[in-house]
Length: 254
Image (tube, rainbow, N blue to C red):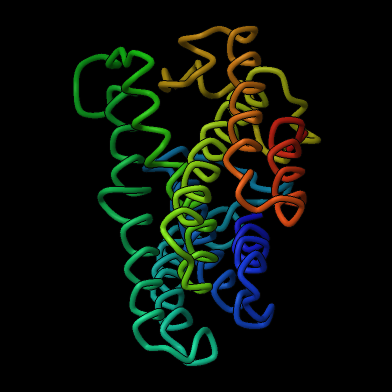
């Protein structure tokens, strides 16, 4: 899904698809590394991912850790290649955006907040309010989805208005994706979702559903889809597929 967002956002500015696919591949390396590490016993301790044994179950923990390390490093190798963009300054901007979204101010920092909410570092779980959960999830889940959209604008050397529109779209999409994920954990069929469900509450995770309840979470999800669609107004009909992507996020089953 993240490479799709890179390709479609880049297409708004006429970026060649083969270049956008390279950038999307770099981002997917980061995403897949995060899944291998997130599934480890020290993190979420999951046995299944996409209906198959997780990396540490299929192989072992050392292999899962090193595979993740390798994928993260490969991501920046790929993003820095001339095939991604002929302008070195654009490639540097892309590498910087990927690093910030995946690092301490993004996904890694969000994961640390997630563990803190579970009470990993204290005697008991820490109660997060809605504002804190929004920050946590914007970092942990939203940052990579938002940078997927930002990457297209970077590669297309877009103007400030277009970049702002894609940033707003990516932020709304990221929050919507997480709410849909929370609802799937609450209500989803493990056989369809492809992993164990019902784990968030048991682990005392800070989730939108946990604070808002399922019904209010669904209302928030619908509002976020509308917000994402409105952010694409500057692109007219060219943004129709990205609008459909927002609706897909809200209605997905896995």
